[in-house]
Length: 188
Image (cartoon, rainbow, N blue to C red; front, side, top):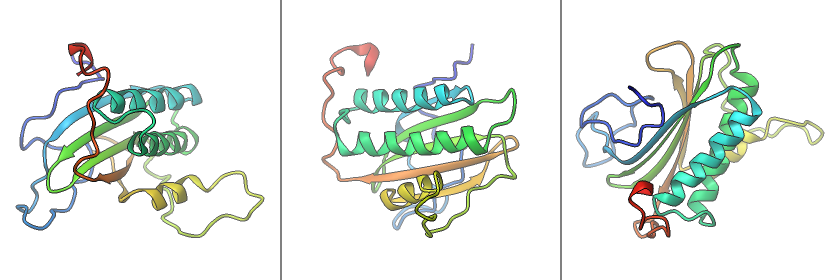
């Protein structure tokens, strides 16, 4: 049975769920480091689904050695919250879920990446650096992501209609600390 919250890393050379990351210097063209941690799950396209996605991403990061109160955990939870809220508000298709994928890679740069995929290909977020007028109730989420992320982008969904919005945070080498939950094998 194929479970959606798969924690296993893909086989080397397997196709990632989003657009390939451009090769970094000293890497072979097209080579992307294999994740050392991966979490993926589908969520209902609702505010409850977006809230659950944020909480599970934060919990998973804690179990990977990025404590709840760390800058990395808080930043990735914020990315997840903003991108999932956009998927619910702008990418909702009746009867369709949105998908979250969280990875940590340890290539040339240690990287945390969150990807949010929805099924609305025609509603692509604008890559604007202009802030909405002060009285607008929305329009600031992607500006926050753009300012905090090391990189972020939008690409077509692989294997179906829709789009994937992703954001990365590059970490200093010594950023991960053993989690208090790591002593339990089920949480590793």
